[in-house]
Length: 129
Image (cartoon, rainbow, N blue to C red; front, top):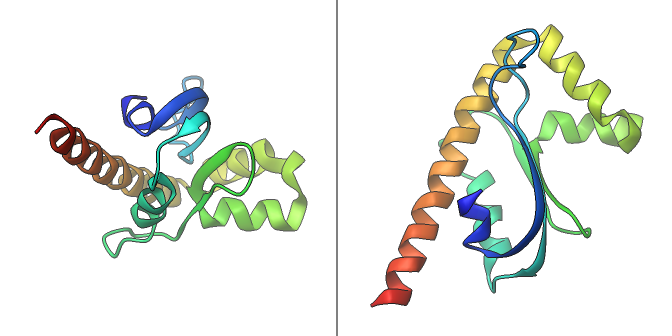
């Protein structure tokens, strides 16, 4: 993902967004990634991206561990209640039971990515001037 790469040297990432390829249901979008060397000030940019008034849902950005993570807070609450090993189960349950939530989360995710893209473009423009 270009936006992540613009913020530091990316070791890996996992992005889920859009319809489930097998069943066609909208999925709960989330993003997990790790930087070899994150750019300075990037944590604040990601925090701002999930704490904007234009979002319909509450989102969480977590950079406290080795891997960074961004998802709707409903997913994170499920992890707190059931443990990290239940992650796939939680997102599948939401996908199967609450398509309205998934659609709203996807709209928000597009807004978050758009915000990050604007910040990334603005930063690159400043570097070249």
